Image 1 (cartoon, rainbow, N blue to C red):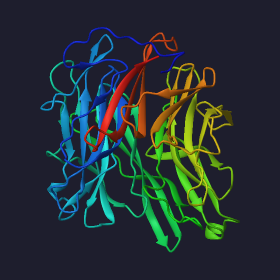
Image 2: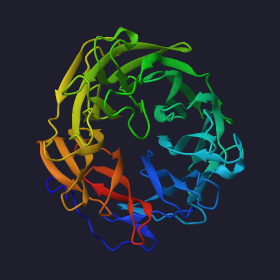
Image 3: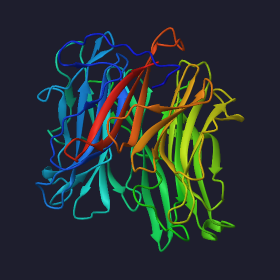
Image 4: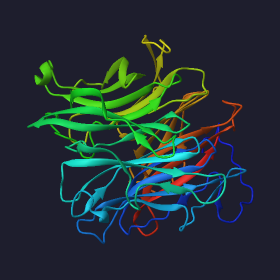
Length: 460
């Protein structure tokens, strides 16, 4: 795999470790399925994976948030999570904090220096609209077990207690503002819903873990009352909506992508329009000022643009982000394509023009490619997706937009991988082949047929 970039290193591994190009199934507390995994590297090369799993022992099979810590041991090996020390029940639905039984789902994770921050929404499994958004920090020392910084076992610090879940599902996403201990979480809040029309706010909370005790800003509105309507033919898609994804550029400015969809005449729209919207924000005092905004429609204006993801690098010498998303026609069973481009901010620390570099992902009219995620590094622009073969087996294609425009197959650990997540650990000399490490997680069926979370590491 990665024939032109991958360094396949296969020394004898110490017991209890996993090396490069090896599949690892992560442990699971719950007996039900696990999915929606996310993954991050810290600045030491440690990895943390978070996901949600089904609690079949509780009424309605609510979801809980779990996580696994993989310490980097040097020489391209990572410690397999110890079930007692490195596998965490992060959010426990049985605590009944917002209902008779809670539902904790769809987490995100990001690194702040050597530590990790995990965020998720908690609602009632009995169908509450109002949710609370919670976070914890995993404190990682030079030795000894990692420790969760949290108010109570199974509970996180509440950063917004009044989030309207609506149809979107909140879908929080984290970004590192300062490796010294400051992150931001961006999420959707439903403002209005009437018939096929819906309007959302995009909120942000700054999370400060730099002191002895964490502190959080009041929620700020980044984008107000934008539309997320049901389309004419297929209505509202399954799963989350809005789906914000956030990174920080070379100047420490927040860059956010999210979905929008407006039906004709709603907010004076001349026709049905679907788009991914990319915005860059500068913090000014206690507020956020938008510097640039650009919308990307699909091949047809009424196509729904789905699941945007962004990536950036502080080591590539270009103030840009990589952006991927799905172009989804408003028709049952339609062919879904992947879009992948790089957006360069020419204004630097000020508002300015944007330059677009298309990566020309190799779509096909006879096959859907879905669930794309980008990866960006020095001399590196990749996008990963999910592709279903006629046999029913799914693969994870990786498009190497830079260098070379090459399509290869990323490693997967099951015949039905879904929702890949990736992160990149860049080491000096930046951009040199072999200096970068990638961690890839995905959900898939294990040998018993249950959905579980798999992870592997690659060097290139």
